[in-house]
Structure formats: C-alpha cells, structure tokens
Image 1: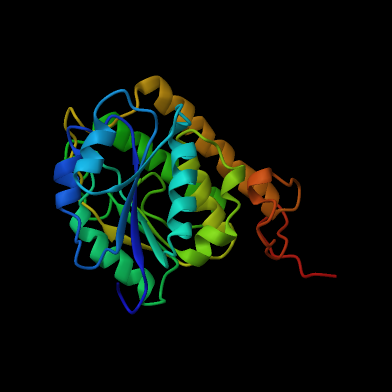
Image 2: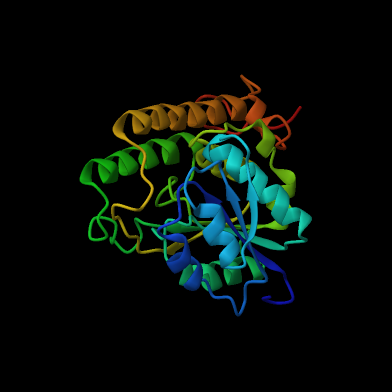
Length: 263
C-alpha cells in the first residue's frame, strides 16, 4: 500500500510465457498488494507460468482482443477493492520498477492518471523502437494534441496507472476490444477532466516483446485519428459518440475554439 491505498497491478497477457517470470520478478512487491493476470486464450504456457509464480490468473476461453482483455483486468481489480490500478504488459517491454513512482503520483492525490512515456527522456530509439514507429508515434501524438487540446508527450504507451474513481466513471464498455482501446480510454479521461501526469519510462524492444505488424499499425492509426475527431465533434456539440455518452459535457465551443457561455 501507499498512503493506505491498495495497489493492484493488472497484466493483460497473450503469449507471455517467455517474459512473464522476469517481468513479475521486477515488480516492487513491497508496495503492490495484488497482481492479476488475464490471459487472452493463449496457446502457450502463459497460464501455467503465471500460476507457478502465484499470480492470480483468469483465462478467457476465447480471444477477446487487447481492449477486451483490459476490460476484464479492470473489472477484476475493482472487485479486489483496488484504490490504484497499474497496467503492466507482461512482455517486459516497460520497466516494472517504476510502478512505485507511478502509483505514488496517483496516491498523492495530485494526479488521477499517470502514463509511462517512452518519449520523455528521449530513450525510445535507443531502446530499440523501430524508427517508422517512432515517427508514427510523434505524428499521431501531435495530431491528437491539436484536436484534443492537450500537451501529452505521447498517447500510445501501454504503461498506465489509474485511480479507482477513473475506472469507475469512464464508460470503458463502450470502447473497442482492439488496440485502439488504450487511446480511447486516455481521450475519455481528458474529456472528463481527469488530471494526467507523465513519467519518463525506458523501454526494451526484443524478439519476445509483443508488437503489432505494419498493417495493424495503420488500422490503429486510423482509429486514433477517428477518436480525436469524435472528441472534437463531441466537444462542439455536433455529435454524441458512444465512447463519450456518459462523460460530463464541458462548456460548448464553436469551431473557432471559443467557449460559448451557457444560455
């Protein structure tokens, strides 16, 4: 615990048998109260490794996708009574030792969401991120910051910490079951006015780390732009996308970006 708040780490897993043990060992178990793993119908030994390590493990009988996996992760964490939930990929691409810092930033009450940024600190390329993905990341992030009105260093990291209130209030069930879930969730948090902090996170790229291919990356990129455009139309009051259906509407803006006072 930190400041009396229960910390649960969730691991959305798929084919993680080769990296799970090392990743789990690096978690700061002195402050983490519970580790939950949801396996998305892997056909390898991920579940067996997780159970041997003593990780509370849930297995989907059929693959539900990366977003569908996270939906289960967060539901289980809330059932466990988590006050702070940290999502950590079990492929050991992100640094687990930063869980303490990320959880503390939420436990302090200063932030509601904290993301581990691969861009802050300028370590992404050095860590092995393919250059085309780095360029893709920077262009998409710039477009989203412009459309959403934020100043995040990146929207595409999979390393995140959330307060319980965030997970209870965001309409996560309306989000995609695919990779764009991460992006939708972050934009929802911005739309709801939650405070988002960032921390520099070195990452590792190696053969066992999970990656999506170029075609899936393009599909993801289009989904990211669609999410940002949906936000802009929602904020202008011109559309009511399902992913923002229960998010409190901020003061209306006209297309020139000026706030319109309520009648």
